[in-house]
Image (cartoon, one colour):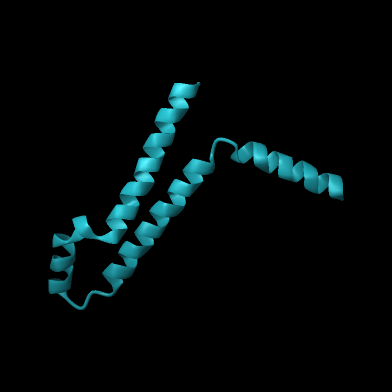
Length: 83
């Protein structure tokens, strides 16, 4: 039983070896998208939507979305330079 657990952890470690940054980026992007959804659900009318659209560049969710996309790009550049 212990050997099965050790083998499973080795396989999981090998699988996640080059994918940790991608997983982190996906989590950040999903959090940003969930924040967008939460904000859209909380609108009380068209005026709230228009104000949200005007201020989308300064929205925290936009910052997190860009951070996640930046991690994807950074990982792709580092991965292409090291292979």
